Length: 527
Image 1: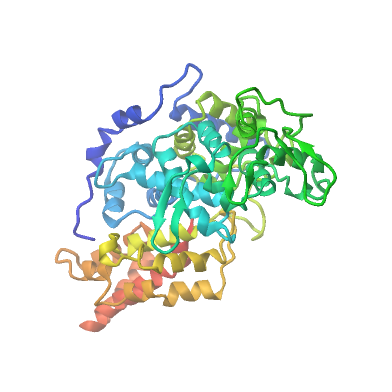
Image 2: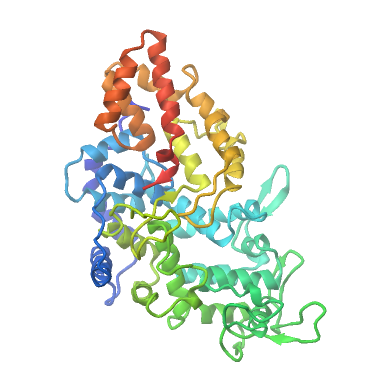
């Protein structure tokens, strides 16, 4: 791991403009560049902070930015060689170049764009079907399809349309040796959320409109303006979903169980829906939902991207956008308008946010632990279970091929993620870990093997390296786990401890340090 040379950072820099141009859709006359989008974001928040007498946090150092970008975009920490290349590269533009590389570079061996797409597929799947729900395991099969959309940078309104109108007839199938044929296409979304018109209406409204109408299923919503008729009007669009089949009926009507009332399809907030000849009810719903004048659709997409990258949404709750005040939605609605003008380009939006100075600022220091940071300032984020596994896999230099009995395929990944899901929050700034999760990290098979001098690939690569002195070995372990070199105080203390040992005890000292780094808060939290 330590001796392997990464693809030189400088070598790919010269190709970034061509790669980005090849992968990005043609710009419209209204569309600004990602650099100008970053400036626009910074100017909006500079104004807001000045009005509120908020002192902007300082910018993070390069190592923190590197780790933050890799975790947010690729879902894993960088390798030692990737960290060295970035930190040693002297250009003042290296941060913007890194963002472009992670989002656009598809050439081997790094294939950054493909890995970024796979991570965002996981992010979006967890948003659509939270990982701590019983249906989450089925929903994982959505990820290959979602990754295809992110790789091709399909317009977000088209991705939503495909999901909303998906049918079982068009669903791709794979054969599971234990479970037999299983669907993998977008129709799986409806099956994962319950396979009923009621659950479909509730989930689609939450995912794409940022509105929770589920409380209006049995009675008028107690905290919002939605009525029971609004809920069943939406459910009527999905009346063809039942008994595991995802389809459409010619007439969009529905009668709740044990109810004398029949409801006709109606858009949220509208008196009724006119379904054009030749269109299915869900096609009509998709037309209305992704229309440019639907203020909830684009704003919800932007809010979800913002929550993942910054740590919390531009409104208090991304799933209660209908209850946000006009003042709270001001910047969000302006950014949503730019997102629409970009052609619903998700990659453009992500790039612009990550290139902004706002994204590159330090986390807000809150006096009270449960206090919300000011708008635009990021909290410390928790890693998702998938990010933790991916980072462990990277830090431990685990094999990734099925033939090598890798943790990806031998059940260890599934076990780790399932256990961590028990405490995972659906918001990146919440942490609910407990004793079982802590014990799994401290004493689980991955960690035990990682610190075993005979089994650990990372330890053996560091300790057996002929060109690393004691300082270099310690630095390599820090880069492998924290993506930064040790601070002066850490280095002084640990080097003294290492040099006090002799022979095999000195090697064991490195193993103990590695174990401590893997089990520290800095490894499982993101600044």
